[in-house]
Length: 115
Length: 113
Image 1: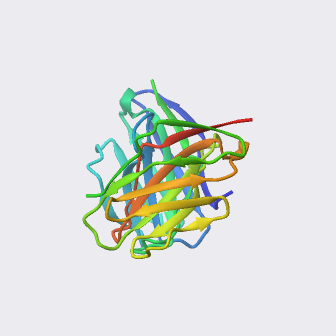
Image 2: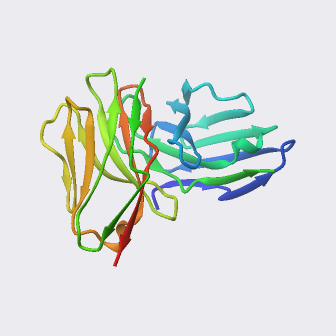
């Protein structure tokens, strides 16, 4: 148990659905991240929040919408997804900001399938 | 922009033997950190070892050690006395002072008894 919890663990959604992924950390960290993990591809950094402000958005399609209401919670709102969006979505947190030597703690991920 | 390359999609090793996983990276920053993460079937990524770029001494953590070649931008992971529990995906990663942790494509390690 790393202290980062993601829910749900598995999600199947239709292309017209709206759903949200949730991430929660109780480590007192100030930076939180969303990564997308697809087969045979590097983990793709999607969003970075540092002190609850978005500091990075790596050209992610607008059908993915992050929300960070406080330093302990991070959401990823999903709408009108495509089948190619099916992947493992990982949340991570670290002490941040700018502390590049600190360890990132990961959740167990949400396995998303878009049908 | 940083990039991390892992050229070995799969590796295998016999129990108690030694295996080396390769990683090369590219960054324009002079100050950065390098990491190896392990992702077992449970999917939870766990830090294995980290290396500070300004330190010439290679990091070691018990059976895990790195061979850091800064000029060549190479950062390999050596696992000694391999155990069945070492079987997992291993990801090399690089971070700089912009809060971004960039990963490679991973190497799947199989350990045979």
